[in-house]
Structures are given as C-alpha cells and as structure tokens.
Length: 494
Image (cartoon, rainbow, N blue to C red):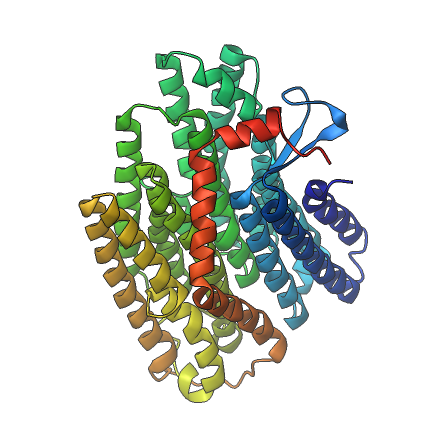
C-alpha cells in the first residue's frame, strides 16, 4: 500500500471506530490520540520519502493519470501534512483534560478525525474534483463540530459559517463544470499541460476569477472574511484551534496550487488584484482586532490579518517571497492553534474569554503564563521567535523584488500586531482580574500547549534549514513542469 493513502485511510478507519464506540469515552480519547500520533508518523515518513526521491505519486487502482484518482506529494504538500499531524496530536491530546459529555457522546472525537481526513485529502489530491469533495467533507464535519452542543450562539455561528462556505463551494463547482467542458479533464497536471498549449481566452480569465473568489472565501481573504470572526469564537477551544490552524490554510494551499499550475501566465492585473487583496486582508484584519473585547475575537481578526502574509508570495510570483510565505504559513499554523488552546485556560478559570473579566494569570499561574508567552510573543513578531523570523524573511524577499509598498505594509502590520498582542497580554495576563478564580489548571490541559510551544521554538531554532526547505518548495511550485512530469510521466508509482 502506498504511503500516500494512509493520511486518508487512517483517520477514516479511526472515525468509524470512534463513532461505533460512543459509550466508551476513555477508549475514544486514547484511540483518537494514538491515531493522531500515527497520522503524524505517516506524514513524517512521506516528507522523508519526498526529500529522498522527489515528488511521489500514487495512481489509485493502477489507472494512469488523467483517468484515475491521483494522489501527489511534493515538498509543500508534505510539510503541510506534517503540520496537520502536529496540530492533530495537540488537539486530540486535549481530550484527556475533559470534554463536554454531551459533545463526546455525540461523536466529537470521530468528527475530529473526519476533519483531519478532509484536510489531508485536500493536501494530497491531484484532481480538482476530489479537491472539491474534500472541501465538502471538511465543511460537513466542521459544521457539525460547531453546532454539536446546539447553543444559540453556536447555531448562529454555524449558519454564518456554512452559508458563505456553501456559496464558495457553488462557485468552485461552477468553475469545475466550465473547466471540464472546455478541456475534458480535471487532473491538475493534465490541465496544466492542456492550458499551456492554448491561447489565453476570456473563458480562462472567468475561470481564474471563479477560483480566485471561491478559494478567497475559503481562505477568509478580504473582502469575504467576515464569516470567520462571526463563527470561530463559538466552538470549544480545541475545535477553534484546528479550525484556525488548518481550515483556512487549505484555502491558501488551494489558491497557490491551482494558480501556479493552471494560471502561471494569467494577466498581470489578476496578480495585482491578489496583491491588493492580501494587503487589505493584512490591514483590515489587524485593525479590526483592536475593536474586540473578547480574547478569541481578537485571535480571529488576528488570524484574518495574518492570512494576507500567506498569499503575498503567490501575488508576486517570486521564489524568495513564496518561500517566505510558506515559512510564515508553517509558523502561523502552530502559533494560532496554540493560542486558541490557551483561550481554553481562561474558559476554565473564568467561564468566559471576555477581556474585561480576565487577568491575574501571571500573578496566580506564572509558569502557565511563561508557556503562553511563547505563542503570544511569536505571533507579535518578537525576536528571536518564529513570527519575527517569518516577517523578516518576507521583508527581505519583498525588498529584493522591489515591492517597496508591500514591504511597507508588512512593516506596518507587524507593528500593529505587536501593539495588539501587547494589549492582549496586558489585559488578559498582566492586569488584576476583577474577581479571582479558585479553579486549578491540570497538566492535561497544559501538555498540548507545551507541545506546540516547543514546536514553535523548534521552528525558531531551525529557521535557516526551514527557510532553505521552503525556498525549494517555492521553486517546485513556480516550476510546475516537475509536478506535471511526476504525475503524467515520471511519477514513482508505488
């Protein structure tokens, strides 16, 4: 069996087992956690294989591309699979700290693995229709996870979340129909070959705009980002962590993959539009964060603002900037997931994440605060943590490409992030709380936060080899012939 099948098969089998054992909560927690460890191990094995042999390909049923289902892993995909495994381990480990019994008995653990299956499938598919299928798998699982407890706030958040995402799915499906009608294929490598031989037409521009809009909604880019702050504050912190860390990144990944393969020679105006969208996302997301009075709402707007960093590389179509964006994506996956888990500490202590009620954490729980300081200050961009390294890499790359306005915006939003996170730290950790909490924080709640904090430190310590790796991943993306040949001619058929 191919390694590339396992990131789909493993969470699928786990979800089936978990949904059949709803009355065994401790068994569910262990199975969910151990399966996530297995998913991470498989992801690391795929990364090692890609490093050793280059792009690896699996053709399901032995059907050659473009006739069968194709699974593909290059450096970009394999790094994101590893990040998915790391977040999966952290989120499933939070189950040992306790899960609401109503959620647990309604399939919480199984649905988490359905979500992990959807994310993994979206990263490794080589076919646009299957990418659409995995988006729908993620949408169904995430909708149920948001609304699982059926409080009024969660139902409202779920409907706002699903409405905009269904609209994006409709646009995506429309684009697929038009594309298949024009080319007769939906295999991404085959499409890249076919479109490269055609003269640019109005239809291709329409298709590019449809994909641009659909993936822009999925990635919560300006101006269709408002569904994210309206929904990500409602679910429990572990669900918020996996949403913030992974779901929007699938939208970013899809934008990068589809545009580097299918539309590398699109009109400059399209990429200028993407650059303007990225810049507006940075500014509006971070400015919106200052108006928020809830810890998780601040994180949601911060998440929106930093998604702009992820698409700058695609907008400029430069290997150095693309490499910087990929490095920033990896850093942000771990940091924002960790901060949503940190918000769970406040819910445990104060039953709310309203900033006016929070405080005294540094005084009453200094070790907890020191651990939480790592993701807070990393997101703020304080040297030498990974956030500073990621922003510095993007600054150097954009200066090198003479994109001075973009560099200026990155600097301005970096300062805004620093001010916003300093305010969040002062209000949530440093100031005296209006009323002290008598609750205690168990080590089961802290271990996932410690784990992701250690990963963040690892990204900071090994920033140089990671930068070289992301630059190589960017070179692969911007030279799609390697990907096309791997799928259609030279793929390693395992």
